[in-house]
Length: 315
Ligand code: FRU
Image 1 (cartoon, protein in one colour):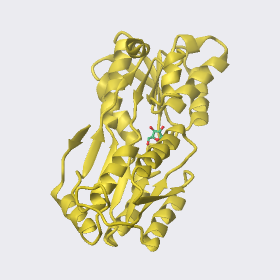
Image 2 (image 1 turned 135 degrees about the horizontal axis):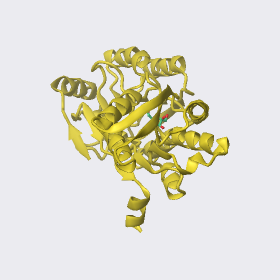
Image 3 (image 1 turned 180 degrees about the horizontal axis):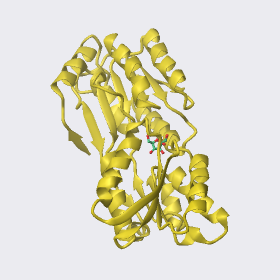
């Protein structure tokens, strides 16, 4: 794991957040018998497999520390609900908040307000604006986008027409996966002929891909910002009934064993890029913060590419 850039301001916040608290047992700072730390976790939705996996990872990591009690809340993909969940955690007086925001801008203020009340906040996957949070942990979406772009250039022999099915563009992963990709295809003969914001949703991607197929006789590849969208695009091509799902290359992101990796194994996707859930790292950071230790302001986790070749090389 690579840790980047520790901001001095963050260190101050972290130390302050931890100084009034007793240290959790097992942490470097020693423990206090019987003390339970309440962590409020607001997940943006549980309708998508990647988020279900993130919750499972957080639950498993927390279970190894009986002094931690995680209160799980599901915002059901609704921004206002998630804003209220953060406010409720503040009113409850939890010791620490973990949030995986639905959207960047609207969750910035509630997170900042929690920080103002002295509650440390760990932000996962999608960012908030500014620097009023304790620690951000996420996958490197610019790197993923760039590698996806390079993969497309190579897979198409340097030129071709592609469709980009974006994630929700009011989120940083959507924005970064796009700019990274543009960088990755720069200087090549790859042309984006159709793009749409599919909000991370498979049915939306399927609908948009149907339009793209109707408009363009030649589509060489689809770059989808997540595996559900890549699968939706594949299904649209299959349902069109012209066999184009066999010639178009579909590329996705997330790389869950039972989703993207399986699609690659089944020949549906030409590649997926693993997007770490950040669950274990979040609990690790929470323990340190509660113990009054400093953590890096930003923790970026690297990706790995999954293709038929990488799967075969593993066997
Ligand atoms: C799940 C998800 C993932 C994606 C991530 C980006 O909600 O759409 O598929 O990688 O969010 O924030």
